[in-house]
Amino acid sequence: MAELATIARPYAEALFNASAADLSTAAVWVDELGVIAQNAQLQQFADSPKVTVDQTFDLIASVAKTALPNQAKNFLRTVIENGRLSVLPEIAHQFRALKNAQSGSSDAVVYSAFPIDESALAEVAVMLEKRFGRKLNASVVLQPELIGGIRVVVGDEVLDTSVKARLEQMKVALTA
Image (cartoon, rainbow, N blue to C red; front, side, top):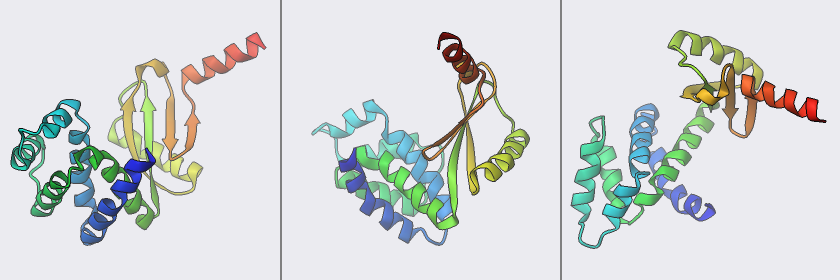
């Protein structure tokens, strides 16, 4: 894992410096490209010696949901030409970390058993910002096994108020 981080760092830093004028837009497309690059079938396709850089580029560009700006196309082509497509998810992760460091915020993943609408998420985010002491970029991931409540992960900090966690605590207390 450290090797991927080492390879990804110069790409993420170069993209961060080149995108300084519009980091939010760059974050959207680099995250999308990172998700696309995680696909095992795409990796297998790109690694084939019979497949050209243009074919790999065209496939990824056609799969992308948003129209890629020229900067994204140039960046993607560079990554593919250098044989670093498998590192693209880590590049996206490091780019987001650089963006968050500049803005003084952190990503927060809110795991919930049920969907949370935007207004409720905004209210939860305000409470979480007070709890964690910094601005948070909250996103929701559904996890039905939580039964109820939420589990929040901010970096290496976890706040678990789910029913599942409470049941586990009760189980430990009863068996101790």
